[in-house]
Structures are given as C-alpha cells and as structure tokens.
Amino acid sequence: MNAIERYALWMNSPDIDEQTKAELAAIRDDAHEIEERFYTELEFGTAGLRGILGAGDNRMNIYNVRKATEGLSRYLDENVNGTARVCIAYDSRHCSDLFAKESACVLAAHGVQVFLYSTLHSVPQLSFTIRELNCDAGIVITASHNPPKYNGYKVYGPSAGQAAPDLANEITRHIRAVEGFKTAYKPYDEAIADGTIQLIGKEVDEIYYAKTMTLLTQPELVREKGKDLKLVYTPLHGSGNVPVREVLKRIGVTNVTVVKEQEAPDGDFPTVKAPNPEDPNAFTLAFRYAEENGATVIIGTDPDSDRLGLAVKKTDGDWAVLTGNQIGAILIHSLLSSYKATGKLPENGLVVRSIVSTQLADAICKKFGVALKEVLTGFRFIAEQIAECEETHEHSFLFGFEESFGFLAGSFARDKDAICAAMLVAEACVVYKERGMTLYDALMEIYETYGFYREKVKSYTLEGKEGIEAIKNAMVLLRESPLKAVANTAVVKTEDFKKPEETGLPASDVLRFTLSDGAWITVRPSGTEPKLKLYIGAHAETDEKVQARLDGLMNDMDEKLTSLLGIK
Image 1 (cartoon, rainbow, N blue to C red):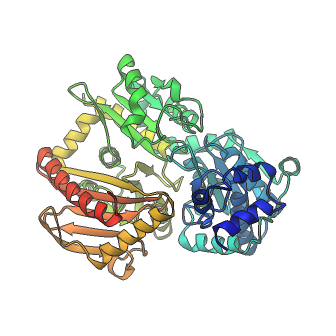
Image 2 (image 1 turned 90 degrees about the vertical axis):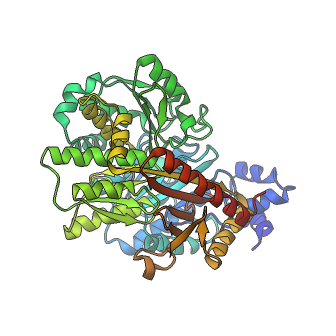
Image 3 (image 1 turned 60 degrees about the vertical axis):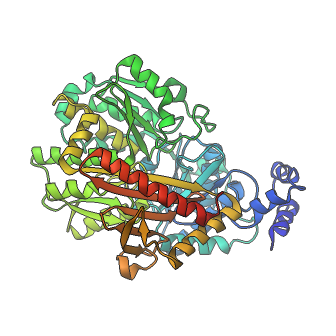
C-alpha cells in the first residue's frame, strides 16, 4: 500500500480511537504530511523504535508501541520456557508513562510477568534490574537526548544489553506478522490486581545504589573529604534527579546544588533547545548557580540518565565544557591511577571504546599495561565485551566509553550509566583536590603526559524521506570514490566496516580513513536519528598545532560532505 492507502486504513479502522482520527483528519489536505507519516513504517532496529510523536505508521503512538510489544511477546512465547519476565522503565518525555503501561498491558495479556517501575527511572537502572530480577527482556520508553517531539522504545535482552541484531530481527519478524491493529491486551487495573503487572521501585533501587557504590576506588577519602566539594548538578528535566543526588549523598558528596529550573521532570524541556548534555548551551543556567556557590564542577545528565556532561572551572576563571572524549580520558586515568595506587589494578584489565572515540585512551591504557579493545558505535557492543569477560575470564572489564558522553564502570549495568559516572567524576574531583588540582588541571596534566589528542564531531541533519535517501546516497558515493587525501594529507588506510572480513568487527555502515600523519576521519549515518555524522581525530605535541590540524581537516571534509549531501 502507498501512503494515501495507509492513511485511509487508519481513518477507516474501527480499532483506531476518535482522538487519533481527529488528528489525522486535520492533515487530510496536506499531501506532504501524509507522505511523511505513512510512506514507511517506523523501523524496529537494534535501538528499538524512535520517532516523532503523532498518529501514523511512521510515528510514535500507542498503536505502534502495542504492535512492537506484541512482536516481543510472541518472540518470548516461542523462546522462553515457563513464564517470561520483563522489566519496563520510562523517562520524563511526553507519553513515556502511557507507552510503558500500554507495553505492560500487552505483555500481561500473553501471561508475561511484568515488573513496571512505579515512577520514572533511568536506562542504567533498567539494565541493572533485568539481571537482578532474572528477566528475559527489558523495555525503556525514551528518546534519550532528542528534542521534545520525539519518543522511543528500546528493547534489552536477558544479558541487559540493548537488543543485538539477531534478537531485533526476530522481534521484527514477529511484528510484521501482526495483522492490522489487533494485539493482545489486558486492562491495566486487572493486571495489577492479579499480579501479572508488579510495580517496583525503592527495593530494587537500594540494591542498585549499594552495588554502584562498590565501584569507588577510594571510598574512605571521598567519605572524609566529599563534603568539601562544591558541585552543581542539572538533571535537565529528566530521570537523574533522584538517583544521582542519592548516590552522591551516600558516598559523602553532600554540598550539591541542583539547578531548580531544570529539576522537575518536564517533557517540554522548556529551558533548553534539546535536553542534551553534549550541548554547552544546556549548562547556561548551571553556570550562574556555580558562580553563586563557588563550585568548580558542573554535572548534567540527559532525560534517561545514560549520558553525562561535565563543565569544569579553568585556571583563568572561565568554564570549559568538556567533550565526551575528554571526560572518558579523565575517568580512565583517574580509575587506573587509583587502582594502581591501591594495588587493585588487575593484570588482565580491559578498557573498551567505540571506533569513533579518542585514541588518547589507547595511550593511557598502554602506560598502565591495560588492554584496550575497539568496538562498533553502540553501547551494546561494549556490553558484549563485558559478557565475554565474564565467560572467558581472559580479561577483567574495568571501563567502557563512547565519545557521545556514554560511560560505564563495572558490570552491574550493561548500558551507559550517567549515575555511576557522576559518582566517579565526584570521586576524581576529591582525589585531585587532595593534590591541589581541579579536573581541568587533571586534563592538562594528561595532555602534557600523553600528547594533545583532540577530536571534532559534526552532524548533518536531513529529516524526512528525502533526507534519509540523501544520507544513503552520500555513503554510496564515498564507497564508489573513496577519499585519496584530506587537507593535502594522503589517506594511507581506508576501512569499510560493511566488510567484516577486513575489520574483524560486525558489518556496519561506517567508513574510516587514516591519514599519513595518524589523523583519522570516520563517516557514518546515525542509528537513531536522521543524521550523517562526521568524526575527526588528530594528535600533536601542542594544543595549538592539533587545533589547527583539526580545523583544516574539518573545513575540507565539511566541503566534501556538503557537496555529497546536496546541501546548499
């Protein structure tokens, strides 16, 4: 069926509620909007569903959420002996609580034992709870740090990592077998009454807090000196407000000022353009609080609290908003230094980073004698390395990170954990303060020791059907005519990650070019947003030289990609 036919199907179906039909009736004369909403179905991938809220096949709504959950339920019916168990969490976005309940009701109708958080909770807490309650799957309703018009539906496997391609493909197969809008459904109150849906909260939180706190490397020092650390925190209207503050309080970091305007959950995210701690503008209000309170560090978390942003006071009094790569380098160096100083550094330690993250991590790990593995973008690949460590005992997982502000220590959770990362940042602040240093001083010390590694990222957003096609076409053209040189520097190695026989990693739509001076360039479509992403990394003996190098590479690549994408 084409878009018009799909539109008519929704308008005429007795299974579609009147409010949804009224929304669709309002666009009956808008051919472009009908095409955008109905030209395709919202695709279920390894990140589950993610899209703009609204009625239609290509939108996030209760019908697509029910259909996805029906597919998951049928998969569990086929593959789980006995009663399947699923945990569900949701963040502060519009309809997150509704979508969570709708998912629970579909699962309950299939006889699945559902553990539904009674209040909004974070991604890492959901990931942790899957293994803690011996669940067969997990669902988080979130669109992470996207703008307010988006929401999403993320599925986790029994290992507590995001669904791998084989699981996602199996769920997709079952989703496609669902006819029309018919799904199993047990009313919420009935499912609560008979215990099929069980509400959870504080009892699981307590276990999560206790285990997270075991990841401190110098707990006695933090307990003694933590009260002297002045810290500003913003949850950016999301789910981090309660758990981040609770963990910090429990370890002894009690002098925490919360940005009041961004404290309460709010799906409109009224104080920011997007609730993204990667964006320096997200810290605008926090800077004022920090100046008023004499704080030297600001922490921010996104709505589902899997990403953490960090701003630190510089020697000259200005503020530096750190990149995800810089935060990762500080945390790696701090952890490995403390482990070594306390005699806890294992001989077979392992750090894992994504292929687009800083190679400064490699240099740090080499000095400490710690192995480093490179994996594809997507934290589930880091989760797979954790599982492998536990299975083979070849390595002891210590830390994993992605440049997109995702960090994880330990193996209790299997996804990015901004709550744990906030705790480790606070500990690093206390440890360095004992040396008379701020985190900015620590970063500069790292650069002086290992060299100046810097990275830049640029995203090209092209929404809609035409945008997606332009991004696909750009990748085709780059493969047909690979880069030979960038900024007058020869490309000495081209890696096409669609060819696992060449990279040793699973197939992925990624191209990486290494230049003769060691600089690297990676281009990939985003897996969750209508974006083409460009990553550039370089290193040099001074900050000035590496910045100049990055500027030259970025200018040349920007011109090349703008042309390939047809951007004027």
